[in-house]
Length: 230
Image (cartoon, rainbow, N blue to C red; front, side, top):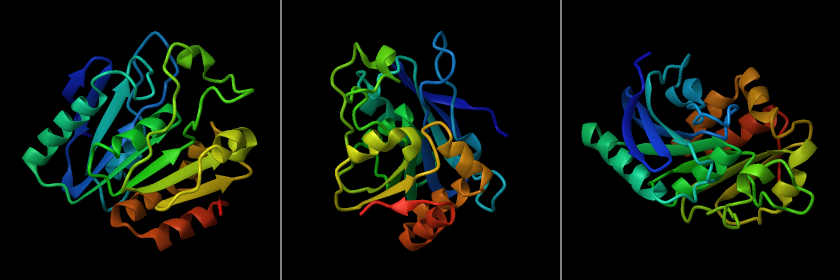
């Protein structure tokens, strides 16, 4: 695979690019990662680029946040705008999807207010990391302003939550037009994405989102055990 190309950086935010073919673009946002002493690594690389599918190699951007700011650090929007301008200067973009896990899911939701996203795939986003009884992200978020997801105005919004430990976070997201909320009773915050990868479902979810094919996406989700929040 072509090496990552750093095409934008401002403050803690960095954007790397993997070029490819076609007019689709996936923008993947990293979670907090595993080593607090180093910036997070790009995530969803195989999924974003369509590896193992006819879509490969699909163009993709990978966004990391060394400050773990949940998309609140200055320069977030400007960095995304600069990166997207570079990509579109090389070749037009027909359909754009953002995605991420946990902190990355919150950033993917926020990014769809800046980028012309058709859809957002947000896996385990926090509605509020400081919900009563919630301690998992306290060390990272204690110094941040109160966090609430910046939900997209127009993009199709897809929220995925594992209810074993994310039920309260899921419940805190209000139902709204243009949003599908997919719940997995047998999965947790950390197990959901590996489970979907193991089932071979992530690629189909991304392809359906890029195509705006809601029926197909909901069918794939249902086949992996999701129930749709009413």
